[in-house]
Length: 317
Image (spheres, rainbow, N blue to C red):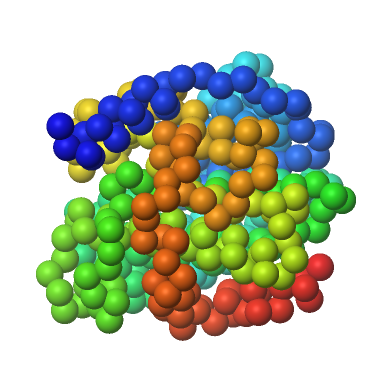
């Protein structure tokens, strides 16, 4: 049996296992879940709301956003006043910053605390399509968006009264072991492959989150203040899985690993780690500082203003 199949089977078993909810969070604790109008994102939003968090639904389509709000509010009788929403296309840097502006307005006007940022949104593009920023769409949504959104929400994530924030990014068991061509990440010259683009983007997600954690730790923001982790959210029958691999997973209602990493006390002191079926994975290129540095330079060159947030992190407080 191949190692991939073994890991997929283990993921099915672990993801479907329920976990005990911990102590309810403070009344103003808020979770932003990107890409939460359906699939794992919607499941995560529902279950974080059930735990007591205010949740911010994100999507691109206003009708689907309203449907998601109705779904969350009907789940375990969640009060509608604890559900907020933002509409933005995060395939561009401008769209990501528009989302951040909306989040900051919600947090400020409602006197909330952003305790959880769940970078869940992702795409599996069948064709090579460039965004407004001249980036390949998979790279733009799966990698650039978490970088821009996390960077620009640092003030909200760090300004706490001795409370911990968490940044979680959805990676995948399908992440590749290494990068074929650092000079052509947007596939302008090499042939475009849907699966390769997705696999690279998921490796980058794990790399990026580990780099977040390293920078924060080096600046004195340990795990008691903020944690940054990534995970394979499970082999789940989302639209993306069905499009790329077929119906080989579990139902989205059973996909609780994102909720676990966002809120469980079991991982409250863990940062800079990639999780697969709730276990720390060590044999990954994401832990290679040199490779992470290459990615950071690529992202910084695309959007210097977002990168600058990390250079002057203490000025944000």
